[in-house]
Image 1 (cartoon, rainbow, N blue to C red):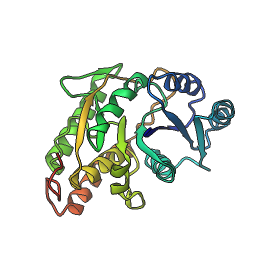
Image 2: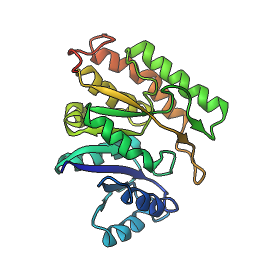
Image 3: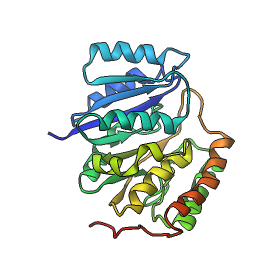
Image 4: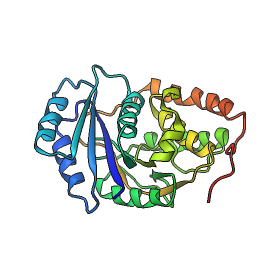
Length: 245
């Protein structure tokens, strides 16, 4: 059986983690969970250890300090590649991504190399966002499409399922982005290598507990790093290799 790992980076998600783990492990598909904790001051890492001690399908990766979402995911991806996981799902730990959508992403990735959970495929599916945040997200998607040529409706989304081969193509040591642009960069590296990327419609619900990790620095990083990605692709707005069927 091809193994599936769900990676959830955490920083002060103590209130959400137990229920999230319960929901994930109750899914009709067999998955394992990796919690990547950035030394959360609220004790999320310790709680994750307690959950893992009771459930062998839960694993915990501790990092000494908060270094950003991109670094947390790269650490988790590296952990997954050292083991025999075929499908690797990334998702937020605050229930903005619905655990029930994980099987749909895995199923889509089985016929592709990367499945993107899209908030904007076939309409807008966002709950609890102010109009200003929605417009920022939609504008970012259009900005990415114009500059990089990627034909995806939601390139900044953080709910994805990678096949092992797609993760290997990214070359994690070379990834420099950390915030919104981390999502753009990882998708761009897979897409520009001619791999098949598909979108799966999801409903995104903004967090009801805790605080958003959004900041001005995250937005500004995304604005200028996409130009570096364009340069890396030889100023092409298409894959370097023919897209695979």
